[in-house]
Image (cartoon, rainbow, N blue to C red; front, side):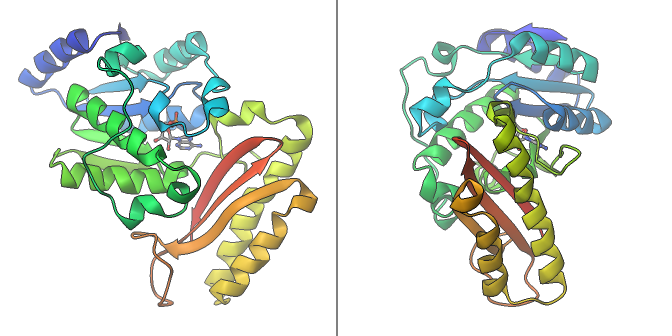
Length: 280
Ligand code: AMP
């Protein structure tokens, strides 16, 4: 695996590969890699001749300063995992490299409702910071295919819209969420869960699974949502920000029974904010 720290160096290599007609797959991450990230690398390896991973903890997408400061950094282990998975190139830029003119939190794209609801409501500015850095990365790496996890369901819908609106001509490949044996969605933040919080956290995926079962059996959406909320209460150690059942493409409230649906949840447990979702 070749490690690049500057835009100039990785662009030279990418331009050379593109001239040779090599297909490029890209997996952007914030590091502290786990098997969820590695599954994206493996998926990219199936169809792309060269796979690029980036690790960049993007300051402008953290609306909570403490969350940014506590974000785990495990770069040596990350490099080991990427080499093992057969990743070809790693882009590891500094903040200065990505933001030469200082930190700004602006994207020229208006995503409308898609970025205002759910995460947009509870993490103001998060998607602007994310979209801004993802567009920069996409213009540097110029991949044919971009691999993103459904774990961050709203994020991959917004990036799909970013690609369309900015005419980037990149295929976004959404990949399924990788879970721990007990169902907890893998996340870099899971290492911050203490024993009690880790034990309780299994309720999140259990609730989503039960919601899926109930909705498939024809249960009422409002009642099911209410039931789900009751599973993730303060009494059980949760501070739940939202649990919603929405249209899987627009994230708007469901009006017709036949619409494609997704259940999405954000909850804090033991001071750690976790998100998860399930297609219904
Ligand atoms: P992050 O490092 O958290 O920004 O995530 C980088 C990419 O990995 C995003 O596309 C995430 O959706 C994806 N990802 C994170 N966790 C998982 C998981 N458990 N399963 C699959 N993909 C994941």
